[in-house]
Image (cartoon, rainbow, N blue to C red; front, side):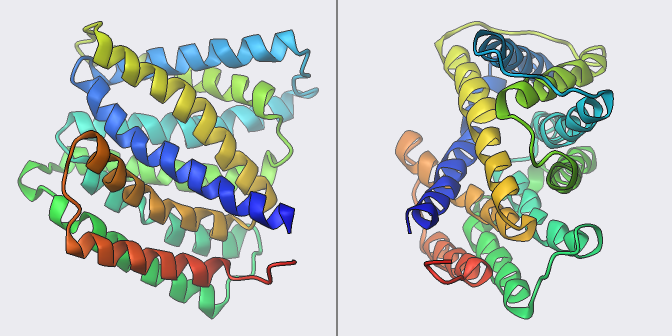
Length: 291
């Protein structure tokens, strides 16, 4: 019973951290270029995780193969996902549009999992995925600004989506026993290195003020360390298709947090969408309480 409750709570913490990350990302990009913000975020996260690993004498992977697998998974799940998302926003794609595109992740991961991980995805799970995606549409539809979308921005949104989707599958298959601190050190380092070439193609700048500092700290500690650690714990303990369904709640979290922080109204269609998403996730994750 305790284990079930613990597993039920983790997704909601993850949902809050990841969803609110969209808002803090926009805060940060008002005072910084995309890749400069991202490079600083990854580097600080790497330093924190490396310090924790050294102080508590947490072992690093013993083989080069394991080291490479962890680095590659991080480059996809952390690096490519974040690079695509930050560039998409910098090209004018709204957070709501990004949320809708990222909400395709559960569907992509589920069908790839059938082929790559031999997971059993029944009709109830498929129905839940479809219902959840419809709910996401209700949540973000009114917030999509079609006039601001560009082909280049949408391209980077889909790059972000594929990095997260393929990276989650790779993490599940090859890195499920990764230590969160030493593995996180490797993954944030690989992501830091991955961003460097992109810095050469932007007019890098940072306007240091309170808003940017808050955004940087939240995206570094709350998202890069906190949210990703929760994601890896969920991937390790559950079927990847069911874990991915939690991403349907990320835009819901963004809407709720923006209501409290930005005083944006929650409309009737969004309430309908939230209820629909919850129904979809219940179908996907339905199990006996004492299982």
